[in-house]
Structure formats: structure tokens, C-alpha cells
Amino acid sequence: MSDKSFFSKLETQVKASCQIKTELFEEFDVKRGLRNKDGTGVLVGLTNIGDVVGYKKEDGKVVAIPGRLLYRGIDIEDITHGFQKEDRHGFDETVYLLLTGHLPNSEQLKEFSDHMASLRSLPDDFVKDMILSMKGKDVLNILARSVLGLYTLDDKPDDISLDNMIKQSLNIMAKFPTIVAYSYQALRHLYQWKTLSIRHPQVNMTTAENFLYLIKGDCTGFTKLEADLLDLLLVLHAEHGGGNNSTFTMRVTSSSETDIYSSVTSAIGSLKGPLHGGANVRVLEMMENLKAHVKDWTSEAEVEEYLLKILNKKANDMSGKIYGIGHAVYTISDPRAAILKTKARELAIEKGRLDEFELYSLVERLTPEVFRVFKGEKSTKVVCINVDFYSGFVYACLDIPKELYTPLFAVARVSGWCTHRIEELTFSAKRLIRPAFKNVYGKHDYIPMDGR
Image (tube, rainbow, N blue to C red; front, side, top):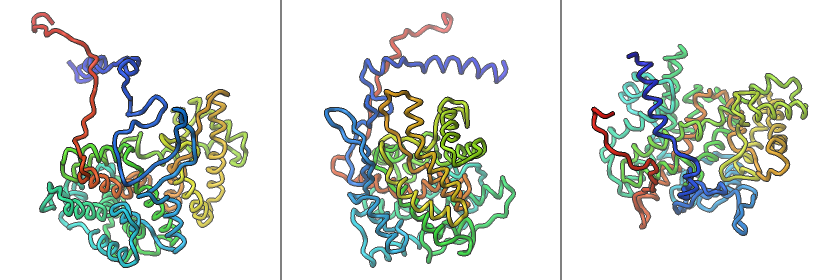
């Protein structure tokens, strides 16, 4: 029997064994995807860290409200406006806030930033053996195996005492940008035949500046505005409550008291999935497709027509999805998108790409109505753009390759992951997370070999 025939028959049997009738989920009141019938998330935990607000409930019904994101109770708009007003980068301050629950003063921030910068470097043997010698076509995959490799460099990898978890978290956060940058350099060298450039991390740069330096070269390789935009993206992606898929994965694995390296790797695996990370790449590809097929980028009629084609699975990737639109929690607005849009326009002007930005803005304005028309007059669903809608455009303006879009998400979100791990293993009511599944396969008899 050929391998193709063998696997074809096996596939048929496996597929049949996986079928579960949809009505059974309702019969047993199963919350598919941990979602209630109204689309809201099932409440499964408590946290002091982040809060994602996109709706309120009145008389048992979900009511759309403008979105809000809070880090340790502080509105993300206030955080970003605060450090932007003082013309400085805010990622280290944000990490400190997430970890400790309060904003650092100038002395605390300098001490924290200096410590984080001192942890950025990787041992030469580690870089050679874990990143350069082992081939990899996906940066997140290389990142995941590298994080597991950090376990071997830790004298107390399985120690979950608070002080050790803090030390481990800071070390991982600081090294993430370096690992991601080196992973990309290795990938482009092996598969794109480009020059291999491994630069030493700089301790006198912010996290955003250092990352741009590692992938581009000296300080002349990027402008101040470019570094400001990357720092802003890191802040906006740092945390998003305990319910997002990768953070929940981090908390589930951490609840078993496994080591931090295993937990972080599991979160990376979650983020790598196309239903969680990578949406900004799809937005960028969708917009490139739209630009190629819409002659007049300022024509509302042409853009509307093409958006309807996308929804009707007749354009772009035929998925029927307008990427970057809609969110599991946000309804009227995603606060991260609104904050990013303002700075994205500045960057578009600097890069001579204002016409593209205006096209994005037009799609943002037209899509809710196009979606309503597509769904029908009775549709009450409210949709808005999410942070991914503009982030891909910003990365493109920064000349950051697509291979780094989702890994940069991880560079930011690892701060939230680690903070949630610490909370999961420190709060007094901690318990192994173990949900229940109802088996609906039924009872079957064992049949002897000669009767099968």
C-alpha cells in the first residue's frame, strides 16, 4: 500500500471520529470557545493586571460602548499621552507598571531600564548553536526553541519562588528582542542569501531603538519618528487582559507549576496560530490587493464595491473576511487603533505615503456600512477596526519585513505573559486550571480481531 493510500484511508477514519453535531453543544450547554451565546467571554478568572472594555450588559443584553484598555487601572490613552507629551519612549515604564502595579519615578525607571539593557546580550555559543546552526524558516519557531534553550542556562529553571520568577521574567523580556532580531538575520541569510549581520545589543538605547539597530544597523538607519512608532506599538501590544488566547495559554500552563520557559513557549505557539497573531500581515496583503484592483483610491463607490466583493468571497483571498475589522470584545472602537492612527499619519507624511494612509482611513470609514448592507437591514452587529488594521501599514513604513510582524507582537506581549504567570502562581486562591469536557461518543463494545 502506498503512503498516499494509507494516509487517505486513515484520514477518513480520523475525520469521522472527530465529528460532533452542533446541536449537542446547546443540549449540554457547552460554551464553545469559552464564549457565551451572546458572544461575550465566559468568566473564568480574576486579575489585577489588564482590563479590556468594549461593551456593557443591560437587562441581560450586550450594549456596545467605546472601547477602553487599562493597564493596572490606568487608561492606555493616558499612559501613551503621558510619555509622548514628555517626548520619551514608554515601553520600559509600561513593563514596570504591569509588573509592580504602579508607575516608576525617574530614578526607579532609570534603574529598571539600565538593568533590562544589561540583560539583552546572549552567550556566543547559544547564538551559534541555537539560532545560527539550526535552520528555521519561521522566526516564531526559532524564538520558541530558543526560549526552551534558555532553560539550560538557568541555574534554577524550575524554582517558582517569587524572587526567582521576577528574575526569570526580566531576563526573558530583555532577551526577546535580541533573539527575534538574530533569528531574522539567520533566516534571511540561509533562505534569502543576504549578508549575515549579528550586532551586539546597545545598552544606551531604548528597547525600540535597540531592535531597529539590530535589524538595520547604526542610528542613521532609522529616524526618531520611526523609533517612536515602534515604541508605541510595543506599549499598545504589551497587555490585553487574561482572556486573549496566548495569555490564557500562559496562565493554563503556569497553573501546573511548570517552568517559565515551557509556559512562554506555549504562549508563543498560541500566538503563532493564524486566528490569533498575524492579522496585520493579512491586512497589509488585503490592502495591497485592493490597491491593485481599485483604480481611484479616493472613490467611495469603487472602494465600497470592492469591499463587497471581498465579503462575497469574490476578491482578495476569497475568505469573505475584511481583515483588521471586528474584535472579540471591542465594538464601537478599539482604543489602541485610535491611538496608533494619529501617529501613523505622521509617519505616512514623513515617508511620502499619505495617499495610502488616506485609503486605509477610507476603508475604515466605509466598512461598517458595507458590512451592514452585506448582513442585511436587520443586522445590529457593530464592528470597528482593531489595532491590526494600521499596525501592518506602520511596520511597512518602518521597512520592517513581514516575517517580523508577529514576532514583534511577542516582544511586546511577553511582558504581559510573564506578569500573568507571576499573578497565577502567587495569588492565594491558585488552583490547577482544568475545565471539563462532555464525552458524546457513546458506548461501544470491544470486538475481537477475527470479528473486525
